[in-house]
Length: 413
Image 1 (cartoon, helix red, strand yellow):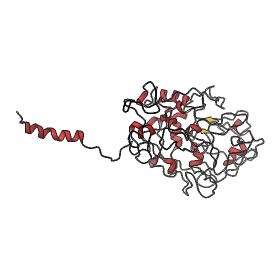
Image 2 (cartoon, helix red, strand yellow):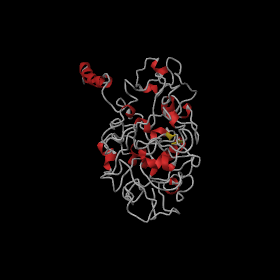
Image 3 (cartoon, helix red, strand yellow):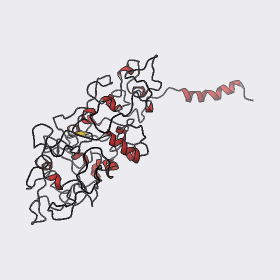
Image 4 (cartoon, helix red, strand yellow):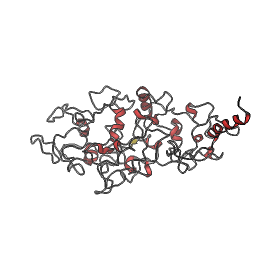
């Protein structure tokens, strides 16, 4: 039989392991922007109770009570994942308000629960492309622009395709892991500060590893930075091979390789069923802006009988991209929402206001209006097509030469 002294000697090491002080060392959440002790989550009502910045309690309420009362914002029922509010209560369409999505409680400029009063998140064209006019300065504002990633559609699709996504999950976590995200808005040219996670790989950041960048496509070239002919995205760097840009093609195609159901405007593609977006093919047999070899040279040569050909402008008109150039999805699109619209196409599919050092402008008065040809396509092309609004009639994802008078049987985009 063991003596009492021996039992104490055996138990003490186990107690030390169990109760030893937790190290402040690195961990996935503590390395994230939300878990940072300098810029992390800091809900005012929780901070007032002495909780440190970055503490889990700023988002999760284990008992919904501190000193006998529920901290603000308060509710009368428990929420999924022990959050202080419901994950998502928005309907099939906008406009969104703060209480529609849990993330909006902080990612809003005015009225946020953050101690600082709000969080500024400018659009991709501004943060990474250098554009100087803001269409939105917070995430809630971006989702209330003319064209936006519909949160209801995201949740509906994600819970049928990705095992980590549950019925009560937040639509934002389809693209972001809140316990891993970094702060790329203050480090736009450093992809190690990744903010996205592939829906098919929710447990890891995407773009932070060198094999997750756009330079995997050898014919990719970064667009020009706004106001400069010698610097490039992201953030106005001189490197232009895509080695500083996450591979947004692989990331976006986790969803957009499929015909995604939509409650917004239907696809322009007559071969796509009503109520769905066109499945995108970026391979060598797919879209022209993907890995498919172009039909004409950079100066339009290749079919002298085809009079509508145009030229390609910098930085897409030099070797090694002269025979083809691959685009990143965010070279032309915003990830959250876009102000752009036209009288004939109310939904403009999250098109950027600035592309390749070119303001997308043209038709109508006001920041939101643009011409398809002069405003959008002339960011990278020239042509002698007639009419300012004709491009999207023949050129779109998955297009085929349907009554467009082209020299081949598509795809035209």
